[in-house]
Amino acid sequence: MKNHNGSPRLNHHHPANHTRDRNGRRGDWLWAVWLRFSLRDYGFCMAALLLFSLGSLFYQLNGGPPRLLLDMRQYLGESTFMDDHGPPVQKVLPFPSQVIYNRVGKCGSRTVVLLLRILAEKHQFNLVSSDIHNKTRLTKHEQVDLMKNISTIPQPFLYTRHVHFLNFTRFRMEQPVYINIIRDPINRFLSNYFFRRFGDWRGEQNHLIRTPRMKDDERYLDINVCILENFPECTNPRLFYIVPYFCGQHPQCREPGEWALERAKQNVMENFLLVGILEELEDVLLLLERLLPHYFSDVLTIYHSPAFWKVGNLTGTVKKHMPTLEALQVLYRRMRYEYDFYNFVRDQFHLVKKKIGLKSTHTSSVRELDFLRELALQTNDPLDEDDEDEEDDTALEDANNWLVQP
Ligand SMILES: *[C@@H]1O[C@H](CO)[C@@H](O)[C@H](O)[C@H]1NC(C)=O
Ligand SMILES: *[C@@H]1O[C@H](CO)[C@@H](O)[C@H](O)[C@H]1NC(C)=O
Ligand SMILES: *[C@@H]1O[C@H](CO)[C@@H](O)[C@H](O)[C@H]1NC(C)=O
Ligand SMILES: *[C@@H]1O[C@H](CO)[C@@H](O)[C@H](O)[C@H]1NC(C)=O
Image (cartoon, rainbow, N blue to C red; front, side):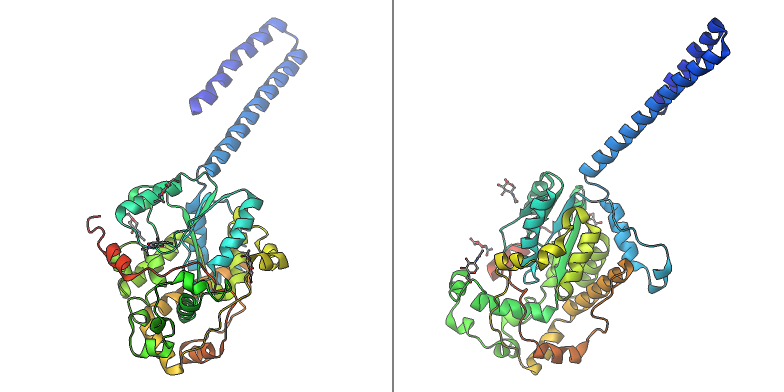
């Protein structure tokens, strides 16, 4: 490349010298050479510019630099309060063209997917939203198939599905940028508990379609009984729900414990551009707008428009009742890993907000029993509709049989 650029320029000197001997008229010669050189240089300059533009375009079309974004995210996440006075954070970052939102059930993803539909049309990216809602763990072959499928989607794309983290690197594929949203684990659990039984705005009969085989004893099971009498639905491993989405497809990712927790945290730092919390959804959208402008520009305008809420039918909720304080405490203890993870994600999220210059609306973090009391006072929440069905236990066992060999 270097030689190529250099040689025509060197050759060019010889004709120029000849011209001097022949003409003798210094002024004309200078003018001619200057013209020729400047034309030549102008040509070089334009060629270089064109090359650079093409390269940059190719670079962006070809996956962009997710590494850079992740570095930025890591910088935002790991730096301390002290560097707040450092150089200001870049507002617009180069955009990655492969994004995965491996949405967690009952964490407001219905709302986000609806927003994405509108955004995809507006900003011309490919939105692929899988309608498989009950298969979050895959066999090794299913993983490879799915990752191959995902990487053939024309870029820029955003792929979304209820699925535990897929490790593209492990199969020597380019790792897309991940984003996600989680919420308070007990609230998520309650939301799912009542959703499975009584559906949502889609009507009174919705649950009969959703869980037709559920018997009345189960449907009308008092949640306190479920928790205090250790029904499977209200104990581990079923309560270990959010962490596996971030830990990955390894079987140990489904075992409530330190290993899965640590791996999930590390993965958040390494592969997720942003993990937001539903409790601060507007700030999540604002940050997404800043970090992924080619996907999320104007998301807040859309989110605030009455038409969006009307079309989305997002206002109806199912009346749910709160478990007793005693039951909540039991639940809280059972979900300690989930809470450890949630608190970690929330702290990271607040750090990113601070870095980007957003003020946290939730400055004092409510912890432990105070938080439980507060939770017990909350009624319902318009954002918890989702299209997720719980996997049944046979599926769980099947999924546990996969692999062993890497
Ligand atoms: C991959 O895409 C093809 C065609 O779009 C589809 O038939 C197949 O089910 C997909 N595979 C997976 C694992 O999603
Ligand atoms: C992904 O796979 C790579 C290569 O096998 C491995 O080094 C890395 O730890 C894995 N990450 C996760 C989160 O599973
Ligand atoms: C919104 O809900 C109403 C009933 O509340 C239903 O008739 C309508 O079809 C729903 N709209 C959409 C887009 O799902
Ligand atoms: C998932 O849901 C589909 C229908 O939506 C059903 O046919 C399939 O059996 C379910 N799979 C599992 C593992 O529950």
